[in-house]
Amino acid sequence: MGRIEDLVAFTAIADSGGMAAAGQRTGLPRSALSRRLRRLEAELGVQLAKRSPQSFALTPVGEALYARCREGFAILEGAQAELAGALTSPRGPVRVTCPTPIAHRFLVRELVSFCQAYPDVWVSIDVNPTKLHLAVESFDLALRVGNVAGDHQVARLLFREREAIYGAAALAPELRGNITQPEELASQSAIFCTNDLAGPPSRLVRLTNGTETREIEMPVRLRVNDPMAGVSAGEAGLGLVNLPRFVGDRAVDMGTLVRVLPTWASPEIEVRAVLPQRPTVAVRALLDHLVIAARKQWRT
Image (cartoon, rainbow, N blue to C red):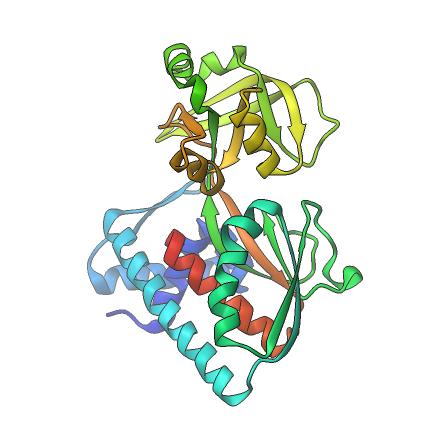
């Protein structure tokens, strides 16, 4: 098997979706990352990724190796977290801020096992769609969707997710009969979950299906900065609603929403944990716990 530094470089490149982003994340020159990837491919005798100046994609062999690397590194990180806990037991408060859907569908659920493992840590959660400044607002950890540039903090990838279009389950026959192509969304009223509540009366929706990409202008019926309120509006039949899949698919499982154009979804969005440069032992323990939990659920 390849040198550990080559495997680490390969995993960082795959995590970041390309050389440039991996260079920013690791601080290594792009040339060094490329050299390590080529060396690993040469040693294994297989191509792990197809790359060009405009694109980067793992081959099937690369996908398989990436999954095994993530599992292995997750085990190592878990062992490190256990060792750190044995040497310095986490204790004290941790203040977290995050958007509503992440709090409901991920953070709160994972706190059950975390609090059982670390009884001397107590957690406060500010559920807020606004990106609050950690230092100014005295938060220890923030879970954020999309771009985290400008925070001047440490950021760790938790998982990647896509948004999809959903409609009321009661209207399922009508929706499936009238909407078979993305272009037909243009005639449907839309509920958009966004912090931009003063936007224009329509919004451009970008959907992908494999290599196909479509952009559709949808008329906005409702803007709301809370996806859980968006779920309620969609269930009531106010319009079609764009939701992260980990939110919308749960409503589908409960029988209140249906997925519209199920093979189409938005480009991937990233959810990251942001924390200060020098976190406490308790904050580090919670971060490690969330990273491992996210990798098990999303295989990031």
